[in-house]
Amino acid sequence: MKKFLKIALVLIVMVAGCILLLRAAVLHFADGELGAAHEYSVLQGYEFRGRDMAHDSSFIIKARDEDTNADVLGLPRLDTEKGYVWFITNPQTTPKVKLIPEGAPFSITDDDLIEVKQRLELMPEVEHYLLEHRQPLPQ
Image (cartoon, rainbow, N blue to C red):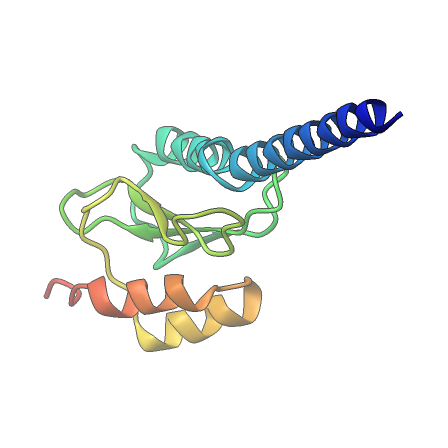
């Protein structure tokens, strides 16, 4: 009987360990690479559709994109006459700052940033990035 209890205890510990490993894997992929890949794919879609868009406005807002719960912000690229830099303002996965194309210069005024914050959910990390990396508007 003792041998049976030891075997049962070992099996229970092994099953519990497998469940914990499976849970960790699910959480990693839901909040990790796969979740981030989905958010980047949303940005890629906006970048593709907007790369030939003239700079008709100082920003573009897409609240709660239909494919996801992401709020998307487009800011005119300063290195070209067309196209926008696209941000997810309320990312659900890391990294918390996602933009396409990366490294492209953009600008946003303080007044525009206030309006964006009133109309979209803007995570503090994204706001900090916008403030730290914005460029002055060309004269």
